[in-house]
Length: 74
Image 1 (cartoon, rainbow, N blue to C red):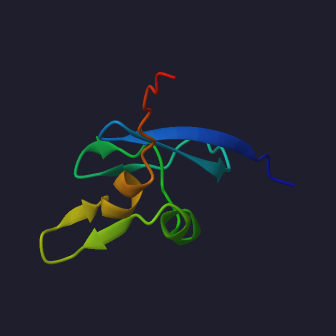
Image 2: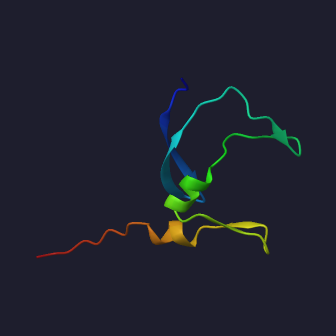
């Protein structure tokens, strides 16, 4: 049985949490060590999209979830 944990991540200053399965090594892509793979279920939950035309991650949905705190004086 594989271990599971809750991982708190951050992309461009935007925080999110996902269920994770720790592994020793994921390998390399273009000489860069892979640190994490975010699955489709987590991407759907946090509204993280891939913009294939721009070769970028679209964080519009994740940005909508940012909490803004307001101070109200009574």
